[in-house]
Length: 163
Image (cartoon, rainbow, N blue to C red):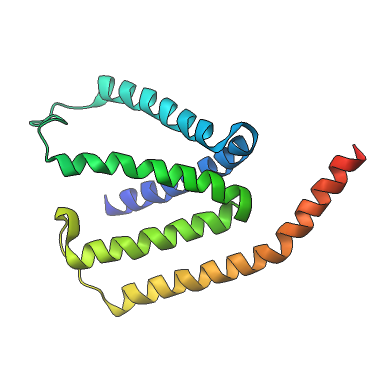
């Protein structure tokens, strides 16, 4: 079951990269906030249908849980807005690796200190090594995209002028 959950998480990450690339393009044409609004509107509709058809009954409702837990819903907004802006300027790969670097760093802090009601999982050399490797990967992906993106933009501009 653990392998299935890891594979599902990898697939979820892949869909986030696809979403970021599409939203970056959409945001450049219709605006960042309209793109984010569409994402949340469609997401709310699909989620409402999933709740209606598939959600089992729970002992508590959203109004019964500690109020601080409802704040988690607000953290999706800056993610979507930042990704729509970032993908347009630095590309999907760099933006995605940067987000994963931030996620990994914060999740290790949450694990280590047991913040937000989560179980405590202490830092280890291998966990710190993973963050360092991802930081190095971010550096190399960013460095390689800096030299290729301007050429690609120039090519696109030349094509647009010629058409």
